[in-house]
Length: 174
Picture 1 (cartoon, helix red, strand yellow):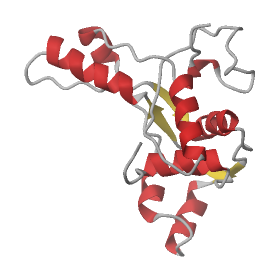
Picture 2: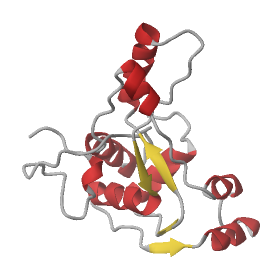
Picture 3: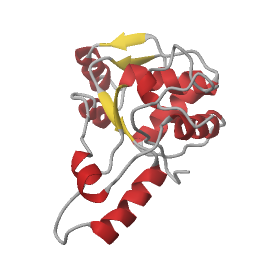
Picture 4: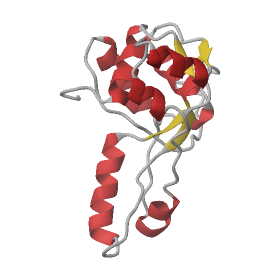
């Protein structure tokens, strides 16, 4: 887990504890399992061209979808308040929200790993197992780093999947 939670780690922990009631509706994150990133580093070392740079990401998720999945996996209520960015800025000005985190939420932080996929054969795995592990750990008051995944080949046998979880979260193999 994180020794000192990152902003993402704090968000995951807060949602897993049920202490975050809302989210900035216009933003999102690229989420990838840290183990996939580690494999991507090894692939870049083995197959990458000198001087090249590769983005090692996973799936781009709107913050509302990500928070809903974390809350579901942690057995908590979903954050339901869609906060306009202007309201988040106002809250930061009066000390009710972290100014740096609000600045980061201005635009979605979506990225493409297409270059790494094509040149390195980088293939991030499903996000659900990483989110499940992180949500369990974070819900107990600890924080862990996560970021996870790739498109899902949805399996009806997957107990972590429900109609409430978007299919792009991925399923572990049955």
